[in-house]
Image (cartoon, rainbow, N blue to C red; front, side, top):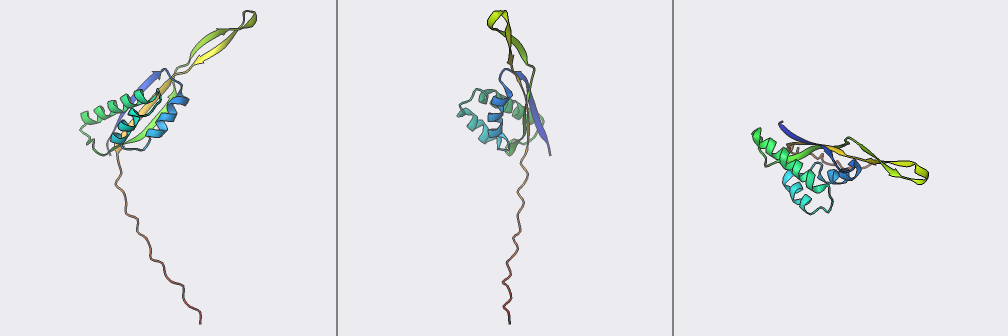
Length: 128
């Protein structure tokens, strides 16, 4: 089963906020995801959409059929943290952590759905 992937490092938004959009995308068809991300009112929607389109272009270059691709894996990890200082009382300072995200997306082919065989119910035997 062929897969295509793309990564984005040190995107300047907290991973906690990026994961909200990543959870919406996980396991869905790429065509549906691209449409849904256009109407998602989060800052994280645009870079994730761009990353999915990049992974889709990678799949095309690997000659993978793109009709039935799904978002197989999407991971949002923390990237580099930028440390800043905020002035506080009496000449002291408090730390500020500006967090970044590292995103990994892997597209794969949807597995064919297996038919589930249902066993027939047997009526209970009547007592004599």
